[in-house]
Length: 357
Image (cartoon, rainbow, N blue to C red; front, top):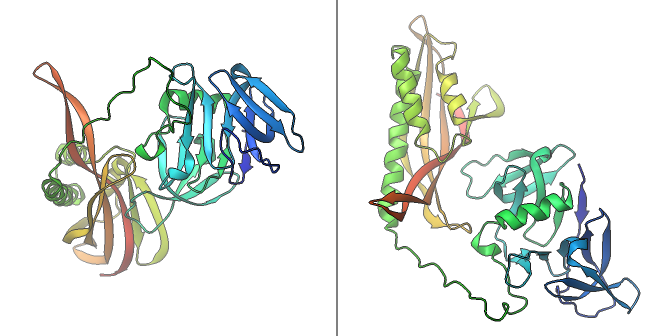
């Protein structure tokens, strides 16, 4: 897989005419130009090669991606009224990873190596970083203007034409006025939300999850009832990819499992009986709007775990955990018309600390 590291870029897409040139143009033939961009239209990009004042031009079909020194990304797109799209990367509040599967991960990237990217997800409850394999990444865009290209440039360009960069902070910047006669859609009206109501609902869902976990972990629960509790638990989460971090007082290592796998493992623990209780459920931070238009909050709680064999407790610990909650909008057909609705979901559960119970 192609992997290109680039430093922050400092000059505009339309060029400043300066002698120092570090704009980058990725070409359709697989090569790249380090240059000074002097102009951009719906059909061409004009540039000067490093150390020269002679202006040259490339046709849209010859170009995949354009990165300017000031941290802008542009690509030609006949579906756009201007003939191209432009994004100001330095407007980001988070680093972002564009994934092959169409997702966009927001957060703070810690490090990269040949196999993995370590990062803190945006709003993540846990103090522990997560890992994203580079095999699933097309493009990394840093909030300071840097970028790392993992996928082929044409693949990245096609992705952005289909999906954009997914977030209000990444909206196209109008480097040129729209084509005459084109209409600019009016901004969507902000929907008034009762955040306190959803804050309360998030607490209720967290408490409901604790009840389901007690049912699942209880060896006396009938098999089908435990499976039903697993399904009800998973439905509380934003997706089955939500991660649950687990720990032990006997080892510093923390492990992560997708929510369904975590719940399935509760049924297989090597104890005759297991008790899991949650207490002190409260907010660390209430719902606040994120750069993607969703609302994020963090709830904290104490979890007490006790494992029994032959009727005697053989292991017990107390863990402080945080759980991220997300208020997300969605559309639904109601009475023959499409309505925009909101609901709050649980997301990743992280360990803060663990001690002997």
